[in-house]
Image (cartoon, rainbow, N blue to C red; front, side):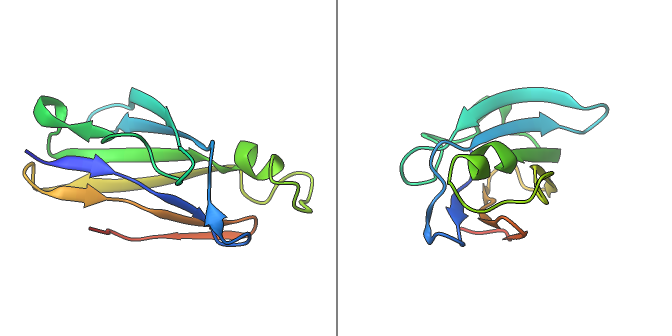
Length: 116
């Protein structure tokens, strides 16, 4: 069975993004909230975001609550924040594959890719 995982790194501070809230949404027909998670000390979620019988092909969206996290880091930030909620919409085409969607985050930019 396939699974979905993530990892968030704060590239401005050079550390894992601890305590960052992440929401998983299905966007297949209409947006539907699946689950909410918070990253651990390593910037990861304990376990898979999606796996086993509920891991299905389709379109999904991860919503990273970057603004809440960035405010807690004591970095100099503008008001309003440049980045607040970072949505990443992606497709799962193979229900037996591992999809890893990491986020590299700073107050003024982010990047992602399909990892392993």
